Length: 322
Image 1 (cartoon, rainbow, N blue to C red):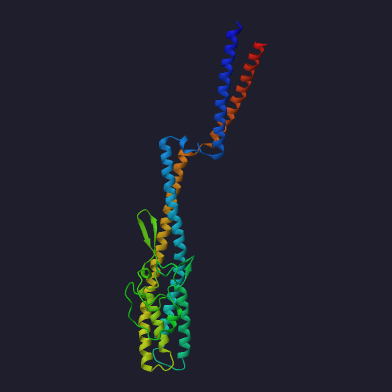
Image 2 (image 1 turned 90 degrees about the vertical axis):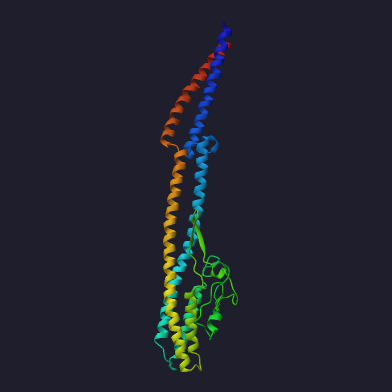
């Protein structure tokens, strides 16, 4: 009679051990879920459909984060554009007044006018040579090239009221004479799939040509030995150019404001999409931590009972052999 009883006890032992291993495996999984807040750390443990969705959602998040990163970088440049264009508008307005309020030559005042216009020239060139990071923002796509040569601006005493055509470099450009499509190319940024925003402002644009030429006419008018007729002609040319410059620069500034608004709206949209995609991943991966904690407590209780039962079976089996 002892043989069948021994086999039965061994079977119970094996069953108990297998049950314990299964419970321990489940407890380990629950503890991992409690620590990570997700069902599985390995995509292969999800269903094929859930794994594919997680991969697609994560790829979409990465793409949108890249758009947001690019737009944040551009936003910094737009801030400098806004500040400098505001300053250039003020320069154009003040120098325009300088020309209109001094239409006729007054030898006692020409020196003061000249010093004022030279100061405005330096200020305008500094604005147009602004750099954000490693990029000259008014240089078109010649990112490492300082666009305006101060010496050329200050020393040109035979300015022209004629504007240069696209791709041609203005007389004040640091790479003139010659042509450069890059000097006229406005910068762009991808803000979404198939959606590109043009936001750049180049130093070659009409408003800046007019601003610099207008100041150069005033500088030429105030040189020693200039006749009254030449003075009057130069100041008249300057007033006309500077009035146009002011209008154009204000248009550029409005364009920057519009681009800034677009960037904000698109950034908000991309961030909302990222949150939505993260939520969809969470719906697949995330676990109810309260439920997991309850399951752990229940499983620990079951394990204690299983350990006790296994120990009893093992003890009984040993006693039967003795």
